[in-house]
Length: 64
Image (tube, rainbow, N blue to C red):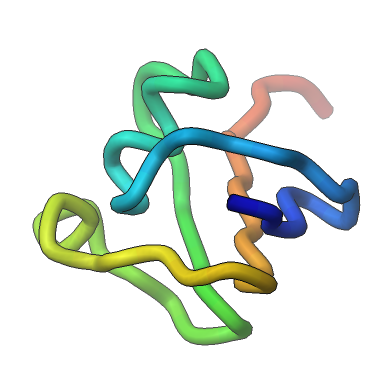
């Protein structure tokens, strides 16, 4: 399936947002949005992906 992840076109096998995070190596606490709509961590397993979806994944960073 072809999606856009953080502005980059990707071809992935994942069919849910949770599976996508695992496939792409995201771990720990991250914030996610699907087609510009925030998706809480508790909903990622149920959130199906479709061809052309736009996903943003943001991880908190320390520093100043």
